[in-house]
Length: 162
Length: 162
DNA sequence: GACTAAACCCAGTAAAATAGTCGGGTTTGT
DNA sequence: ACAAACCCGACTATTTTACTGGGTTTAGTC
Image (cartoon, rainbow over all chains, first blue to last red; front, side, top):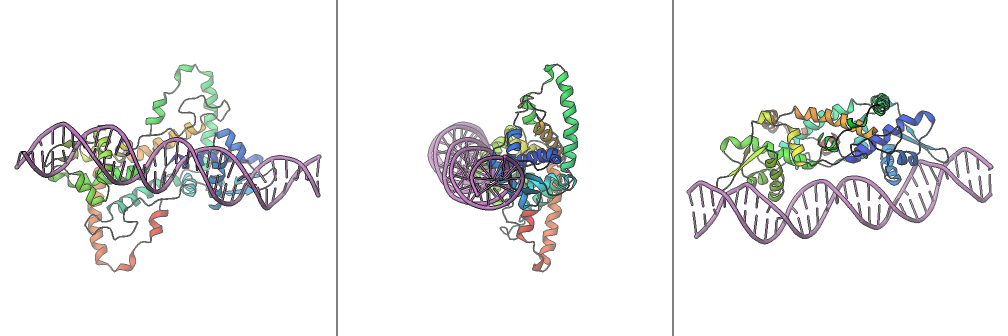
């Protein structure tokens, strides 16, 4: 599984959608404004999300996107896999005929096991749980605003964090 | 934390190094041959790994690289962080002054928490554990070779795996 | 039925990251 | 002296990322 900014954009957009779809279909133009993602890039991403049956579209005025299934049934892994077309990380291409040493398929075995573990983890993080933690975060944000300013986070913290 | 093929190359190279350093320093030329990674690319990666104090170098003939600390003390996360200089995934740059709506820092909070969780997981996977599982895999590979061929994996399996 | 808001589609493209090349060094054991 | 190895910076090609701009459908509204 790749974990890039592309997947993060998709998860962010899906979270925005999940937070608002109770009011009917959500337009990409709205997501674009709120999350500062270009409309056409969102179109590309949602094309993939639709083909992966994670969202459904309603065309015409008043249209937009809704979740194709319950937010509990959509995982972060689903979203990332949908938009992040995978490349082959093993030099043997998943087959067993690497250069014929005892090292053959070393990376294959290593990465498939690491991958499945990370994938399993992200499969257990549902969009619904993100929505919930986001809603509680909103409260925290309001509390933060009542606090003094000096408690701001440094820029490097978020970067080196991982 | 980004999870790209670059980090995989680095982990693969470090695993190769860990498997062989008991015989003295391991040359990049050897890793290049065995793992099919270009020598100059390895030089770039090991420059970063050395500056991150994960490996030590011995110059001159008979030289090469050794682990700077015990294989138990080096995690997959250490390696990936060392070679994969991080980019900022949040549009607010880790600060709290996103476009002033109630959505501000949504992605910041989301990704820092997801990131730390994945980071924590990969921090617990040590190079030593990879070495061990690789050594047992070697046995499995030999067993596989005794089996008939039809049990080969499909290419798509390894790709869609994560 | 025209107008319009939206999804859809597609070709191109600039910037960045990836992966590698090249050509030179410097250090050090033999 | 020589050669093995690290070291380093600049350069290049390819791919991915993120975006621009053009169009086409679809469907609700006046």
